[in-house]
Image: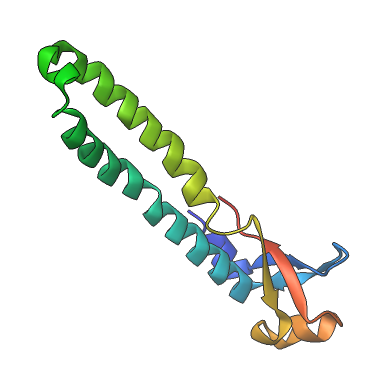
Length: 122
């Protein structure tokens, strides 16, 4: 889906927000960060509800009222979704920083900054 970014690169900006150029290396970093975010996203959703529900099912309240199991499980899943998304998105900043020495030589020559920033995307 983001293959075009790998081919053409993404815009990198200096500290003042001026466009320095388009970097394929920064695009690769952005795609890696996005992929890792998408790997981490389902983890809390898959892990937390079974653990929490195994503890809650042993309580006297839920043993006496088994009809509450489905609503409680729904609330636990909702809480896991609410926790997972901010957690996954906060792993990497939206505007990531990379040293110019790691980028293409033409980008490094185009700025005097030691680092540039790029938008990693979602």
